Image (cartoon, rainbow, N blue to C red; front, side, top):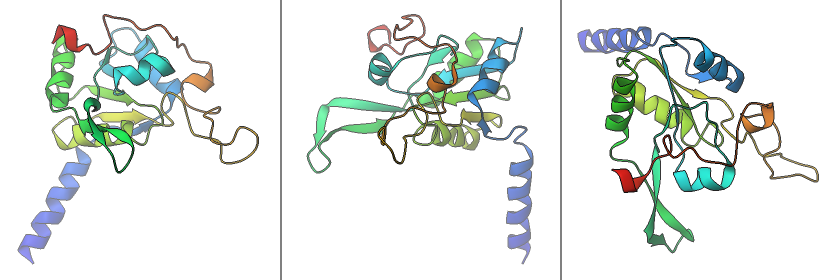
Length: 182
């Protein structure tokens, strides 16, 4: 019984250290980033090749991929290149925080394509690794795919790109994750 009570107390104390909800809208993320001296780190967690073809917002402070495509390995069963978690993700996030003069308790907002495949899991991992205020942009950069109609499957509503927020097809070489500089 004591072990059960201790486990419950630890779970509650862990929950209480999370000062912010994990989901945040694209509009609210942009507003936070635009605040003067805002203690926030806004990171795009997509693979830079995906960003190159889909688009980028210069509002992010850095591109730190959560998952990386290994174009030297092919998954024949799925018909795709192998995708693996970036082993340096936590260290790269911590370095980006320090570069902005922020500690591990700063608000970290992650952005992926849809919000669910990398945005939410990356924020959850960050929380598990001692960054209590990690969160993710709901609906991500491109938003959800339409379920029906002539644009079925297309990402034409919600998300950063479809909300009229600033974005471009042009990449910022100072912000994009580049293996030639590591």
